[in-house]
Image (tube, rainbow, N blue to C red; front, side, top):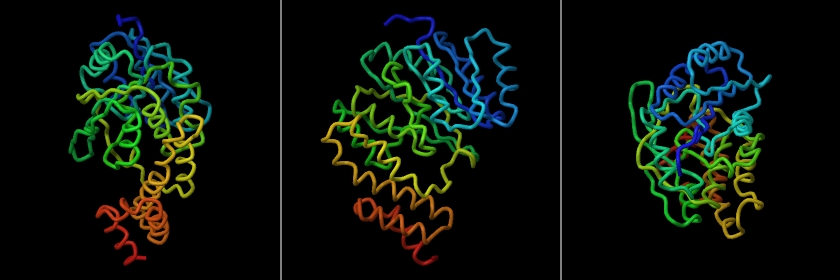
Length: 302
């Protein structure tokens, strides 16, 4: 595949992250690879996001476009707006508080040339905490089996994926690729359906620094999100019938994820309710030390 003026469309959704955007945008605009465009989607921010973005892109000759939602609609809608305006053959969703590593776009471009049939190219990333601690993530391998990759991602809690380290073929993303009704776990159905239905390859190099801070961590409690998320992931219109057998163990893991969130929030009674549901659907995961210790502490503290 030869280079073209815009091979990769970089979509950056943002909501009230004006203070992070200069770092994120500068990490993109300083890349040595040239065949990309940048699409910033302001999801109804109430801070000075528009001023910050226009100040940065007004001083560059790179192809950058800015779109603004009149109200906050959620990250799914922001990403879908980016998809609708993208011109590249591939789309890369970069969170507005993350930072590309030098040479990241070249790493993606070389992988695209090497694996033109891949619908999803997954790189490693660094998780960076406020104390400076940095750890490489997404080390798990992919196989030639789509079902195996689907199962590994959903049923192994250590097999994380993040939009900020993945490039997708644009023509495989539907107009409404990200489910707008989900405000949490909105990326998991997209990852799952791509792994289940299209070739995916692994890039064993880190491409991005994912900065962890209080605003980025999923500590908010969402009591009704589990079933909605699981139903979207196991959408029979997008998955083969044989993959439905993984629904219950995955449902158990999502209840356990909510259990952990509620435990960290100090809501021990509600946490135990979620733990019981998780145990009912996925006893093996519920009895691992990670969850069992928290369940015992919840019972003692309730």
